[in-house]
Amino acid sequence: MASIKDVAKRAGVSTATVSRVLNNHPSVVPETRQAVRDAMDYLCYVPSKSSFQLSGKCSGLIGVVLPNLMNPHFCELLATVEEEAGILANR
Picture 1: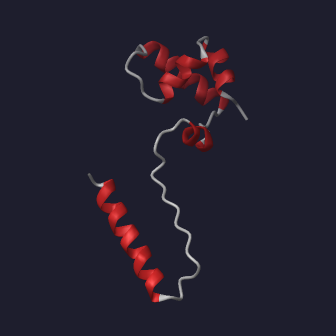
Picture 2: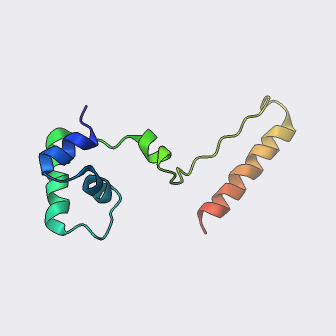
Picture 3: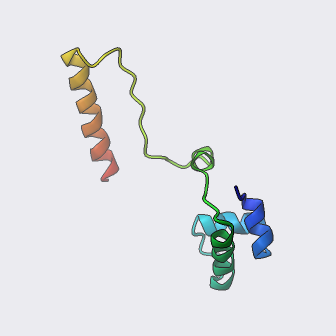
């Protein structure tokens, strides 16, 4: 599996530039952006989901741990969490 280093080497740029392309940073000129994308396509590079989560960016996921869903109280609680999360996501 290709890494960000492999993409950088293939495109002739730094790993920081590849990162900027992945994050749609405006400072990357179109020619460089295309070279990086071409390298990603050639190498079949797929960004890691775990690296995205480690970057400190919001994944949009919420974990809820409940003892069981047989208790109507917990079902109601989970429904409220879903509703509130939906409201916050649409802000």
